[in-house]
Image (cartoon, rainbow, N blue to C red):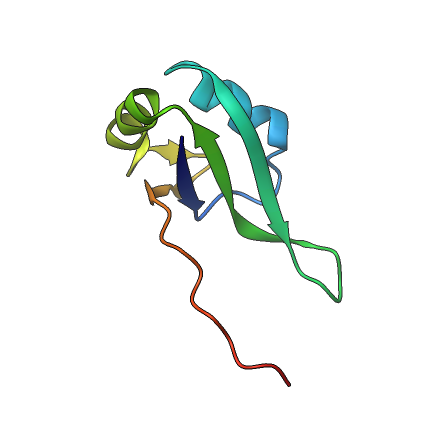
Length: 86
């Protein structure tokens, strides 16, 4: 299972829109669009989980693709770096 980072997503896009776009390349296990903790507004990026081979095909096909006038940034997600607690 691979986690895919999807950035520069138009603010009008829904989880279903992302699921449909990535679904053309295989089974989508999960979609998570990231929201701001304080405002609850979508931050313009998210993550998609897919099987390894399907994920690689989706990354190759969708990185740089235009969606709603914005150029998507699609790559394999890196592990989150630990942040100091406040």
